Length: 224
Image 1 (cartoon, helix red, strand yellow):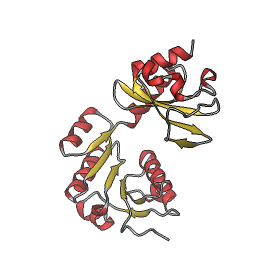
Image 2: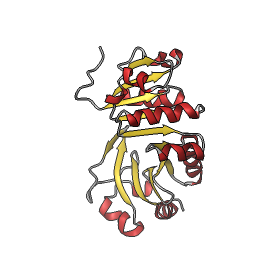
Image 3: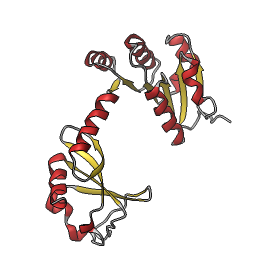
């Protein structure tokens, strides 16, 4: 049984290739309402048995998107990559239909420039993955990393043996390194209520935020 759009946060996904499908499936897993649109029925097939509302359309016209109800979306993600014209058209029509937040997968700087000019946000999935992989290879302890800018990141590291059993107030991580412990993760469950008396354990992950320089300084101090 499909969810009711009313009262739910609605996401539109236009183009369900690998990127769009991954976005749609993750949104569904998080309980969001998803309108999935593609010109290729085969690409939509994995979503037929889900709670997504699925539409096969022949073109990316304003009328086709209206028929699918894209104007009801709070956010639209355009997963069309190689067909730049269709990507721009999907974004433009979504914006003109009143969608406030439109995010597009892009494949070039020129593609991104045009989309930004019409009011869309952009993501370079391949570039972001490449940067993230390179940073992880350079990090000494990080198991995962989320770059938020050229200079600031959030990283996830396995709690070092040296810190096992110690309270946050005793290791003085903010005072010594200028970074913040924002959560600890154990068995896949995150605890964001971290205070001075929180005791760290070797079987947990630490989620840290700060400048790349300070995060690297902290890791160097542990990895000696």
